[in-house]
Image 1 (cartoon, rainbow, N blue to C red):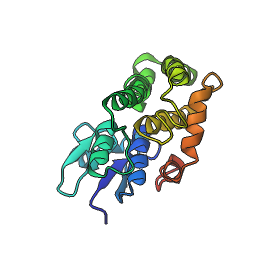
Image 2: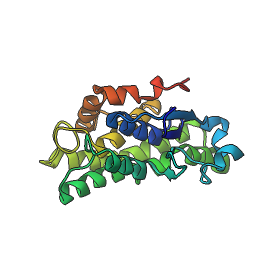
Image 3: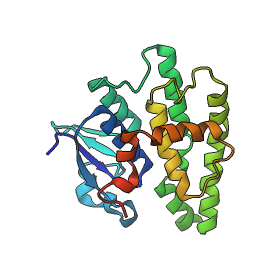
Image 4: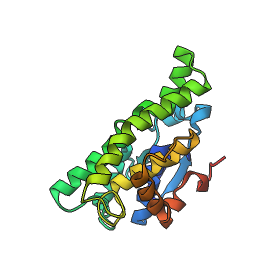
Amino acid sequence: MSDLVLHNYYRSSTSYRVRIALVMKGLDYTYVPHHLRHGEHLEPAYLAVNPQGLVPALVLDDGTLLTQSLAIIEYLDEIEPEPPLLPKDALGRARVRMLAQMIACDIHPVNNLRVLTSLRTLFGAGDQDVVNWFRHWVNEGFQPLEKILASSPETGTFCHGDAPGLADICLAAQVTNNARFGVDMTPYPVIARINAACMALPAFQKAAPQNQIDAE
């Protein structure tokens, strides 16, 4: 039994981010699934762990709770520095955080399950309406992200240089999520190329949704 306990859901892109980081760092953890579509994250037992009722949540060996995927990943990067997920220089770290947050703060929050569910329950959105909403906000975020990546000399095989890091983790998880909604990646050749480089790596493959114990 690992000292780290990850509460997550196989299809959650934020959970996927943390799983990638854990595998990259070589950190063992206990996988605790919560089926979001069945409302298991809102049951009293899980709310006692994470009052926010969201995944992922990482519980440390002393019972300390960490939530929010970017905060968890940066914590893991500090306790296990190799391989680094952020550059050593301040400007490089700022750039990587910028790229990661363009996805994690601007795209994901308006496209997560509870927002998509609210579109249906509060506003009567149909299936195609939800798909169109999802695609719209991905495109709103990916258009500038593609331009930044394509025009920056810091972009290499990955978002920043030739080793994967925090921005790549967010990018790959988002692209994986996009596939479920049929997002056209043709306008985003650089993002697609970086994603392909990520998905060729064992850590990204091992952490992928379809390879988790609760995958359906």
